[in-house]
Image 1 (cartoon, one colour):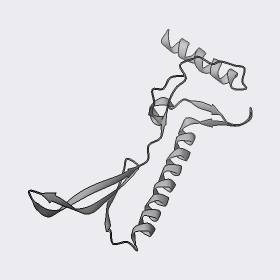
Image 2 (cartoon, rainbow, N blue to C red):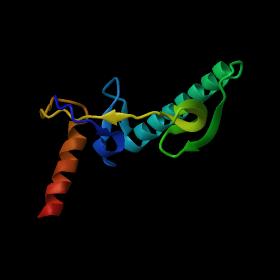
Image 3 (tube, rainbow, N blue to C red):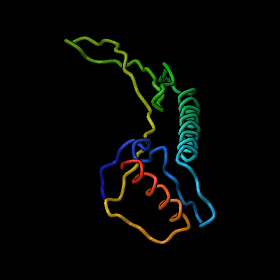
Length: 131
């Protein structure tokens, strides 16, 4: 199996169709990617809530800077650092980032599936378009 992981959107193209759990359940990649995006959003929200709960009663102050578009939350924290024999406050940033990646199996695994008709139809259309 290939271990070259890439962004999930790059591995599953727009025309990908998934067989889910049984022969009757299929899902388009756009629907699948929307579900993954919702999971990421909910997970980041849970992380943010946990950070707020943990640090609300502590003497460490994490200041939320922003929610980023790359599935991340950025916080700023002040740290006391020895610099040239004196102590100075420095601002540091902490980013909590959620990354979902996928990898394609390098072996061509083709088995009989209820999706074979669809696969054959797509293959046939692709071949006709390339002629």
